[in-house]
Length: 320
Image 1 (tube, rainbow, N blue to C red):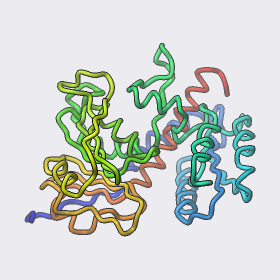
Image 2 (cartoon, rainbow, N blue to C red; image 1 turned 120 degrees about the vertical axis):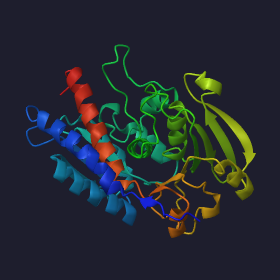
Image 3 (cartoon, rainbow, N blue to C red; image 1 turned 30 degrees about the vertical axis):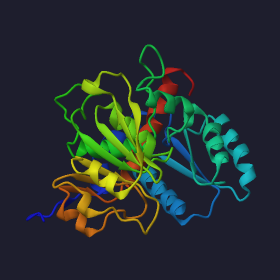
Image 4 (cartoon, rainbow, N blue to C red; image 1 turned 90 degrees about the vertical axis):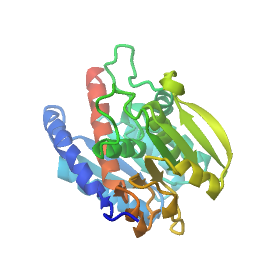
């Protein structure tokens, strides 16, 4: 047991570092958006977590000079029409959907209905393809920045804040030499996060209920983008083996019953949880040097940052 317990770092503290940057950009857009850019959130479920996220988003938007409008859709089948209408509305700058809606492949279809130019969550297939292929711009002239999915991006920004990234290395290689474990491989957060960290130079062990995979750019970062290797079936013993020398452990298990075993954590590791449930219990601080229990407020900051990028991209294309 560590003589000194680790420190808990709250997402609210980390998000403050982006508030100034975001609010000053909103101020600079006063000429074209005197009342602030408009974000529209679509809610077509009765999930209390979605209600809470919508409330946070609304408060954060107002505090930073954005306008936020929550559009409740009583009949799920009308959601697609409502999204298309918002796509066409030039006064709408950003669109997000509170998932799950149908809880199946239809949700993935709805993600693609949102216009690429207004997709603040970065779920459009073009953004995903760029992210997986480690391409950071939408155009050859590198004028239009590609958008990253906001929760994986929030975890990256948290790791930068915690100095896990080595700023002495070139951009794109700053996790070289680091080992990370991500316990979750959802298409929305876990898999893209593993890809982002590997594209930045880390060796990433991605665990889900079926198996464990290794994401890496190869020996000496010889590849431009990450490659994936299957390491076999998931078992607690296998997970323990890969955690033994992991510098960072990131969890996102959507279950209130799941707790990551504290004994698997290397002394001094960084632990981050992006699940809405607490995946670590309080003993995490006996092993971890730094512990971030949730990412919510940083995620919302990244969402607003993404929205400003989209507005800037549309400005450059004279589409506002």
